[in-house]
Image (cartoon, rainbow, N blue to C red):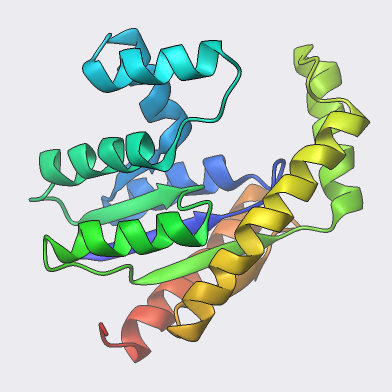
Length: 196
């Protein structure tokens, strides 16, 4: 199985690349944001619990997020692998993901970070805000979201770096240029790295 963790700050184009990778390698695309919305919409036990927390303006706790991930792993255990889009966000979540995958005798193959300078992220997100009318895409909110991303995920990239699974990819260029860079890394990584 090919199991990829894909990271990228807000505005890095991570979601777009995750969809393209899932299609190319026939992977199950797991986006925790999409999962949460789906669980809430379907009024599952997890969804109802998550909705209460989100309605109170709180962050959904790790155990609920991990519960959703485990459900996906169980539902798609016969698949060719997974792409985890923006998850795990903390080292604790990375450890929990490792445990959950171990239950299926699986491992994270690699973690890919899309590197995009802050000025470029700001430019992209402000433009997106203007085009789509998203009120949360203003400079102050964007800077705060990038700060949170950097605080939470840099330790996670170190976690994967220690296991020799971290790869940084230049996130500047067209969607296709960036995609080609990622594919090159995935195929090189698979060739030269054996599972731990």
